[in-house]
Image (tube, helix red, strand yellow):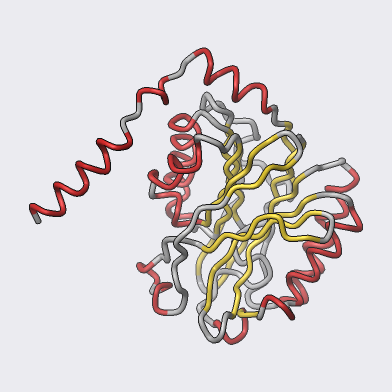
Length: 266
């Protein structure tokens, strides 16, 4: 499966300008016969707390319609971030559309409260998986990357985990380290897609990257390309897990019990 990783300079809170940028990247990805194209968190606005501007009701969402239509036109799946307005409750979402239909709909579980995201957005309570081509895919959003438990929760089935983000330059070395660690821990492909440019006073650098189930980097470091394409193989995940089945030694029930004991002591 060919996966395209964008490195998009998101125009701050300008949906139309970002639609134009996204359309150009989709056209280029289609030329390269990409099966799944991945955009960063809050693709058409940047990481904004302006929910009245960013939020859209799913039934009438121009963002959702935009990506659905192009997924159909270009014959490829598209992963992107947007904000859902659900009766004046707002969710920071990762969506995947294919052939004009939503195939994965995930609400970011961990709002980034360091920037007061939790005051504006409601955290989700479910992980999601979808079968696409020959792979089972899951996905998370930005700050979720710091919480390995949710990656373990999906990795019994997931062979590819996406992370879409607006991860600032000053902490980008942590972004890389955590993506690599999640790939190694879960013996699966991990694809992290970050934005570039400046937004709301923060700087972002080219740092979209993919790792294989052994933690080997598949993308060029420090590439300035707006689109990088990698080829992933479900068979590699299965083979690595067969040769080195350390995940079978996980003691999930014990870990849950340990958490409960600690909470009782506190």
